[in-house]
Length: 124
Image 1 (cartoon, one colour):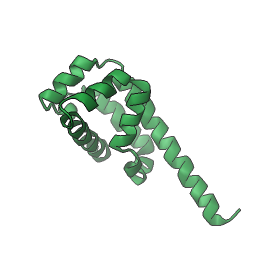
Image 2 (cartoon, rainbow, N blue to C red):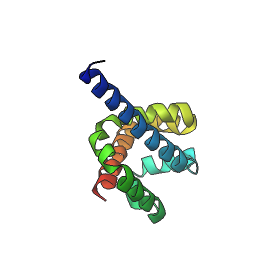
Image 3 (cartoon, rainbow, N blue to C red):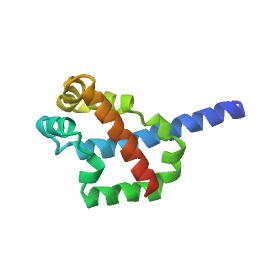
């Protein structure tokens, strides 16, 4: 096995690890959100970071302390499309709310939220 193959394997492993950590955290946070809550947030263009409870922000800060270097290196792998795919698989009602709310308003809103939350967590 060549050195490049080993590096490629290591990178794929790291990306997979980072995305699974994020997916678990993401799924945990979505459990208490209803489609009507999400619809209201989209329609009102609510900034999720501003309404995120401090304990959730602290949890994000703890993840950053533990995995920050890995997240920073692979932050481009955590995309809106990836999160929508996870939502479609794990939270179909929330996924449907996003993609069907005044198309494309829901998707644009979600994309902005994903970008902002990633930046806020990485800046902590």
